[in-house]
Image (tube, rainbow, N blue to C red; front, side, top):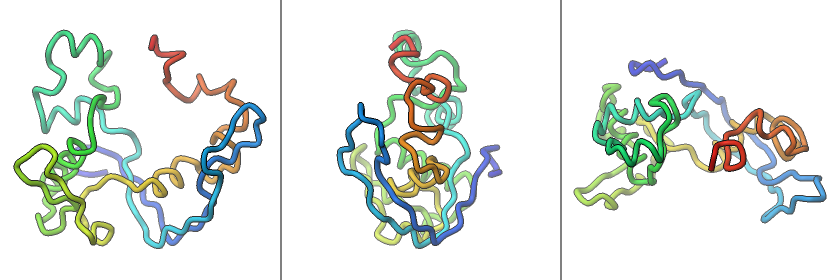
Length: 170
């Protein structure tokens, strides 16, 4: 657990896995199929998504108007919504700062403009907070499942595991 009270999970590398859609369901089609991927390093992920409340520690005015709140929030404990990559990168640097990580170890270079954010070339070797790569996130969330979903092949159970358009009042 970090100083912000967020639980973290360590994934020890290296790991090899088949990345991509493993669907054997006739109703689903894979865009890019599966391919072998190696993640050569260990990495750390938050055990849960960053909540709106956690994000507001950095940006207290985020989604504060009544219209924004009614459209986008039901609770401050839901995952932060309506963030773009730049906002998430800024949060990572802010979190690194809160955790006492020196600025030379932060993973993002941030300029003055909202879109003036760059991932440092050696980001995977730095100690600062960052966003997971696509491969890291898929490996962690698939939980070594070989099926279309981590809970099996059928989408009939999706409502038990995910909040999506059909079960979230759009």
